[in-house]
Length: 227
Image (cartoon, rainbow, N blue to C red; front, side, top):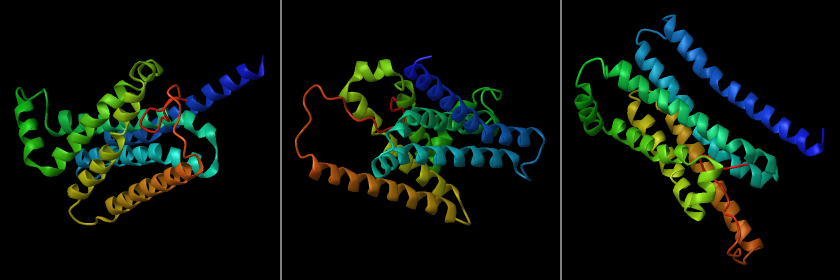
């Protein structure tokens, strides 16, 4: 087996291990929900815990580029797409819990009307749903074929991960009624990641002031960056 083949297999094994590790929290949460171990309000607990993991995984996705630039560990970028898609998977579970279990769609007939009213009426639901809509095209265009087809427009599109993450933190902050230490902490982490990114961008601009040529590939920084 050639060195290139071995590296490819190690990469696939690492990706598989990451996916397996990423679904463990969801499996534990769902298992506890099935066995009625989520407290007095299991639906709310289920929504919140899935939402927590969504934000943590979004922040982990955003942390990959700063880690690469600070440590020069280029290999970490191969995991960015996987972590980003895991975040979107948790977001879908979070939204489906709200839509199907909390709101009763479609079992209650035309409950979608009440869902629409709820989204429009409650600000924290509005910003959360907006973040969901922002992340949908990012997940949809997560393939290498989409990167090739969209070119530099792909990078522009995937900048949506930043406002989507900010809206996710805001959704959490407005949702919490008592102890807001966790959403505030998440917000501070997001600000720190953005600050590190701006700082490293400026350092790179000073070191390499020349503009890249027309054939240079854009850096993939968002939800589904290719390896």
